[in-house]
Image 1 (cartoon, rainbow, N blue to C red):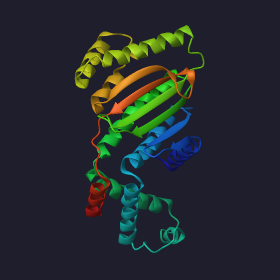
Image 2 (cartoon, rainbow, N blue to C red):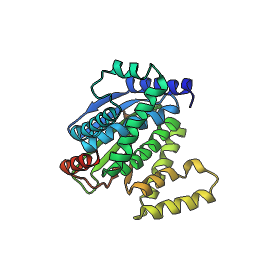
Image 3 (cartoon, rainbow, N blue to C red):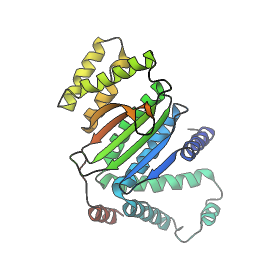
Image 4 (cartoon, rainbow, N blue to C red):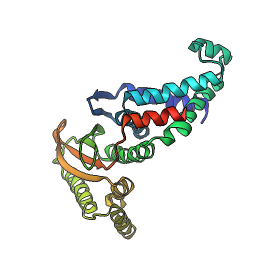
Length: 267
């Protein structure tokens, strides 16, 4: 990626981040905004990943993970007691040198710490599922979305709810599309085994010319994560002009102390 392209990506990320609304609860968070361009799907997914990471681990764990790693890399490079401006001067004001330093830090966080933590693989897979939901938002709705994620005491501890708005939900074309969406999700849920559901939907897709209504993405989402997926007409925030998709994920919750011990032994 060239410097100009990388700068554009950073500016897009900044724009989306600043135009996304955030609400935080004790064991939950909510993102809301609009997906103006296809590239926003990836950016919002990245933002969701970081928020979900903090929700699962908590502030103490995430702060320990990043702060300890940053201090270690700075110490190894003789920069621990320097100000940001000192670091820039020592790197002779070179963008590439600073970028390399950041890459070193985040590589260390991932390969030495995150890979040993319990939720790392789940975070990526679940975020891919959220990307699937956001893609449907961009393709079919008015591009307004609200995502709520929360931890509950249940067989499926992580609950993610997506709400979308439609300009005229009574429009025959929109109604047909939503009916097909509901039928597709209902069909996926007929199979107790998520992998069987994916294989059956895949088989139907290869036999059908109408790939748009195959709902293969939802079947893969359930197969990858073991989640349940439910569809509802209406929305808490958009009222009768909205729809709601609820996904519940079976993740094993791990104590904060155990995670902190893993981080300490990894640094």
